[in-house]
Amino acid sequence: MTFGGMRKKLNKMKYFPIILLTLFLISLCPNNGVCGKKEIVLNADMQYNYAQKCFKEKDYTTAIFEYKRFINFFSDHENVTSAEFKIGEAFYNLKDYEKAVMAFNKIILAENPEILTPPGSDLSESNITDAYFMKSKALVLLGKFVASEVCMHNLLKITEDKITQDRAYSFLTLLYLKIAETNPDALIRAKKYLQEISLESVDKPQKDHLAKTLADMNNLKTKSPAIAGITSIIPGAGYVYCERYKDGLVSFLFNTALMIAAYKAFDDGNHALGAAISFVEAGFYTGNIYGSISSAHKYNRRKRNEYIQKVHNQFHIRIDSSKEDEQIQLFFKVPF
Amino acid sequence: MLPRISFLIFILFSSCMALESCSHGNPGMNFFQEHISPIDGNRCSSYPSCSQYSNTAFKKHGAVMGWIMACDRLVRCGRDTATLSKKVVINSEVFAFDPVEANDFWWYEEKVE
Image: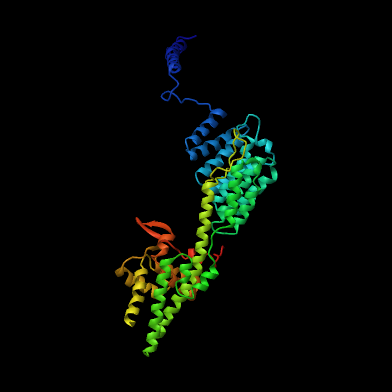
């Protein structure tokens, strides 16, 4: 080795301790944000539990995001369907009913129900049933009553469980009570579904209460639109028949005054004025007949809605399931 | 007698027909809403006001039924309807909610497209 070569080698070795020292110092650095990023390894349970935590804290938007992340990264995990159900619930709680229906539909339309309830999953069979109920409730809130009814009938087709059947019939009763607010014929269907609820699971006082409610449904106090129309030949009488006394009095006085005015105008030879007043009076007189018939219909609708409200208040129909109490109770208010 | 009756008709109309928004269909209604009601003030106790109600009734059901429904509303305005109808709060004021739909539901079905 020449002198020059040895010198070069010595020069290189001079830096060697410095390099070593630098590497040593780097290795001593704590593994934090200053010297390096902390590596977090999320497992399926951590991800799922975080999503659950967001859901419990009612941060539904984040919960949906986290549940979706869970489904994406841990698609083979046993809680995937449970996460899908929770996504549906979160959309429902966010009042995004269209997306809620889609989420519940995904669970309902799964071909093999066993996939939905893998061993150890926290999604029990009753949760699948709940998917039907939740979907139906979401459809009601979207105003899709027929689709909601179809969904319940689909559930009735596949279930033989008496409690679930009673829950479905209770739901359908409430559904038709809701429809009856605008369509009186729906009361008949509500009554039909109410009768389908198994009375075996209802105690005696509830049975009596149920029977009385059904009897009340047939004995609602109503006003005949035909009688209202006929009585309104005397201006205001139709309104009075429909218990609108002030309207009746005003209608009587106003129509009478206009009739006298028209008579006087013609009598005085003022035919143009007489014709003008007669034209106006014709409108008010027919308006009185129309208003009387309309009042009878409005009276009937009001009484029907009062009855429905009474049923809602007194006869809370339960659609949720309870493992502690297997007996169906007709006391749960469905938040339509 | 006759001037009193005419005055009564005018009072009945003007007391109920109030301005809330201008219509563009009926010239008479436009005239009332643009020139009379701003001076007379909004004193209708129902929502929509009688003029808006009449306008909607005319547009929805034509001249004959619109006229009949408007007359019916003018007679009812501020009386039993105020107590029997649902209430609606607009600009901190409580009004009786009495739209055309609440009075034609028994014979007219809305066309769903």
